[in-house]
Image (cartoon, rainbow, N blue to C red):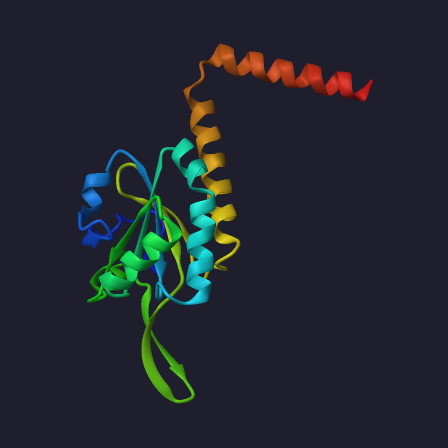
Length: 183
């Protein structure tokens, strides 16, 4: 998988809405990018549902949610309609985007070699740099890990934007609150 602090590889892929999405179009926003092996297996559907259920939290954090899948467009559209996906799911039938991100790999099962998509996610910042990667994720818990990271990042950024006086005022209030709890 692509390493943290590297420029995210560009792609131009078709979405379930027949719009072409280019990573450069998303500059200025954080992007949560996830890769699905197939759109029709149960674990992929669990993963999709977890992102759908928490989509509003992504919106509050101004994060664009994008999925990349190797399934044919007909399957992607069917899944998008069935689950009422509020985000884009992109078709990567020739696996060029998945190769560029290092999630397309070879697997040997019972002596048979086949290529698969490694279940992975990542966060890209506003300038196109990968700031967090999640390899071999668990479909049901990844969304909470990602949102926790994004919320902590938002808190840090908000803290950095405060003036020195505002920071000192907050510190004094916290100290005062802690002293009151002790007594």
